[in-house]
Structures are given as structure tokens and as C-alpha cells.
Length: 223
Image (cartoon, rainbow, N blue to C red; front, side, top):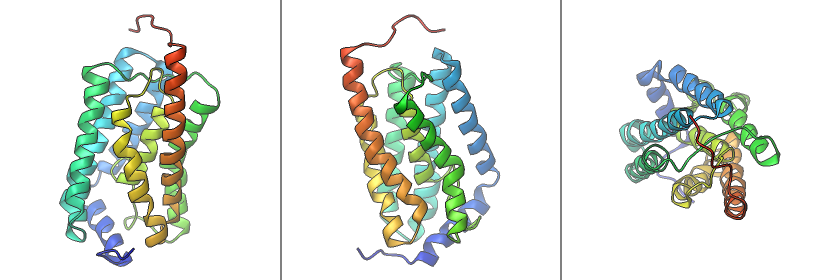
């Protein structure tokens, strides 16, 4: 598929974006570690805080990365940005307003894969990028760019204590395919992990939803 921009233009966007938003990258990592720590705390307040962090990452990425910067080389970024903002609002609606999201570490293969996705988004993704020649600031950064945020989101959803509403999976899944195309079209090998996270993560989350429907999780009040 022919893209409306070159690899150099794509990397130039990251360079301009990273320079403009500094030190938001550090804040993104701090919020990521906070969200991960709250998974182990397992409380209603923690669930809402994680929801706010996820919703904030999706909304920021939609408005600031896609619409304000990526749109300079790809007009489709306006559409991407709108969908990212919608995704942020859906996460906020489901987790903060309707209390349909909960996160807790319970061990087992599925949450462990979620932890691996989080590790990938925060540590392995930038390392693979570095080894591929995508050196900061000409590279995506966790918490403030679409692909690491999407992988991180699937990681947290795999740690969900309740059924994950299907309507908040759709946009992350679609982006895993659209954004993952960069692995092939732009030579961004770290984005192969985005495709894996989207396909494997969505499949396992839907299977977990079925399991939780048959065996509802503990409904005791969480503080």
C-alpha cells in the first residue's frame, strides 16, 4: 500500500512532536508505573485512577499527536485522532462513570501475558526501536504515542477483574491493524508487537469475558 508520506517524514513528525511536548514523555512513564502499581492494590479508587490514566493517554494521543502533528504529513490523522478521542471517552464512560472496569493481579497465563505486553510497551518497544535505528527524539515514546499506548491498554485489559466491555475493544483492535502496518510499510519492527497485542489480546479478552460470564468474579465491595 502506497503511503502519503515517506519514512523520513514519518520520523520527522516524532522529532518535532517530542521536542514540543517535553517533558510529557516522563509524565507518561510515571503514569504508566502508577497504573501498574494500582493493579496490585486492587481497589475501586485504583480502578478509577487507572481508567483516568488510560482515557488521558488515548485522548492526548488523539488530539496532540494525531491531529496537531501527524496530520502535517497524513490527513487521515484527523480521522485517527477523532477515533482515539472517542476511545478515550468510551474508556472514561465504562471505567469511571459506569464502574465496568476493574484491574487486579490474580496470576495465571492471561494476566501474565498482559504483564508482558506492558513490559513490551514500556521497555522492549523502545529498545527494539533503538536497535532498528529509531533513536530518540525520532521515535515513538511510551504514554504519548499511539502504538505503545495501544499495547499498554491491551496489557491492562488482560488483567481485568470484570468483563471488559466489547465496545471499548473495537478501536484499539482496529488501530493494532492500522498502526501495525508500519511494521511492513515503514520498516518499524517494534510494531509487530502491536499486531500481536491487538489480535491475541482481543481474542483472549473475549474468551475471558465468556469465562467470567459463566463464573462471575467476586462481587464483594471494594474500597
